[in-house]
Length: 290
Image (cartoon, rainbow, N blue to C red; front, side, top):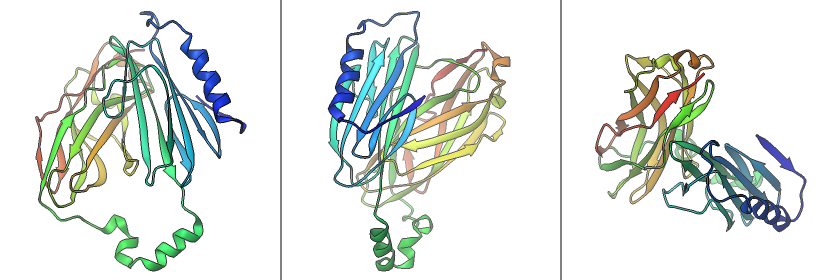
């Protein structure tokens, strides 16, 4: 659900929404699943939505991000830190694309939502940069960081799993990748293994994105036996930590396997570096419903 509101005072919109939701009962009701709503306000306009959304911002913009979690007993941000169910962040536009994500949970049920801030550049600025940059810099997709080095790979405990309806997009892993070395390393994707009881054909595709907003990809789910490769072109700079989210898109007919479980483990990471981690990294368990 996405609603675009006419331009008006940031404080009027966010203040009204946050106050309205904050007076709701603070204790999650067991019969109701958690819900996640984000309110994002920029000089270009305002948005209220659930799920994931890209929002364009410009250098120097002041941005307001309000989060509202309903029927939740816990809430965490993209770094795995505990946050309040209702909150407001006021920040300046980042110099690079960045994603703010939140997860609200109650027992085995959860809801997640995120906003990816996409930094716009003026056409004139882009043209100037292209003239100055040598051809090797223009084609960043052709540039390959030096092989070698080490990557530390681990799981962020942000997911609680739960029930997954036909056609749903469910997060199956949050992966933290750190480069403790002195040279940039490449990341080409993740190998997943279905360890649950559900057949692999209940998944039609995979989607990946990271907290920096620089790596987003979708790929058709192609399993060989129980294993599938999810491609993702990314570079991890020296000393950098990036958090990758992997989501699985369920088929509209997945209800035929109701009661069976989907649990995708991260079996390995395709990288030019030496990957250190407790593989397989356990995935989140989702029980299919009709």
